[in-house]
Length: 340
Image 1 (cartoon, rainbow, N blue to C red):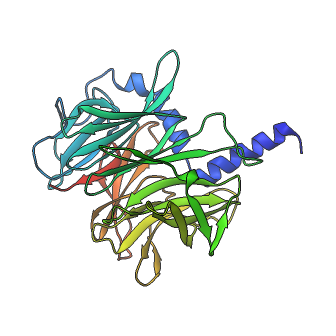
Image 2 (image 1 turned 135 degrees about the vertical axis):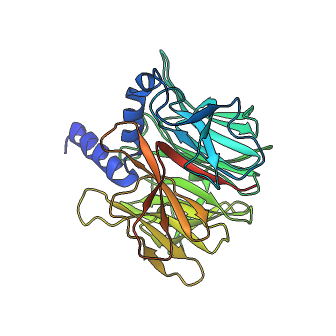
């Protein structure tokens, strides 16, 4: 096999394994400026810091064409279809709690760079990290003490795989725990040290020592349970990506590759942590997003609009029923539910 052919195969495997987030980001970038040069197509109010009013809300990336495109925004939790407050910070991936927000961004200029920034409740920058490549996922613990972020690693490859991710966990007011690659990965009781290990998509439990994430090696993915003190990652179940733990801590929603071909196709699945029972939800489209819980029985996720590159909607789906998903917020991406 030639080196050129290996690169081609590696590129295909990257898209299949990690989904279409990179493609979405490139499309969004290409239309970014043009989408800002007209009045917004939705009702908005501009705010120096989006919706800092003490009320529960949903924070997201605004994808409505016109003024405010790409900026952090929010709507009241009680009125998701209402007027959105549009802030001033551009984010390609955003996640918020009552105290902090994480913003992952492609810093577009003569030399494109990538960054992760932690903001306080008034969107004042508190902490920042340089990213080695295109932003992918981010999360903050419910108590606002821990943050995690993932990016693709530009120009790095592991063996014949040809891609890599970097996932880091840090505290909001103290030291970093570092890259998850430094943690011990345990698969079926055995430590895995393969060079092609990748980790992404962290979600935090109510115990600040415990988190869940995605691990991949040898063409397989696992939901792993992380222990910060022990610096270990232990497999829980296969074929699970980008987990999100429910508010009551009893279930985890994630993307599950249900494809029977080389082309990935991701459904949303929910795992009951006590029983180990998994339920695949009846969303018929392939989902490639960082899902979040609206409440203990409803999951939110973004879906790109096929007829409008760079635009998307947030959808909702019940986690314990058989009904299909419904559109929840138009022209929005990367939801996080902030409960005051």
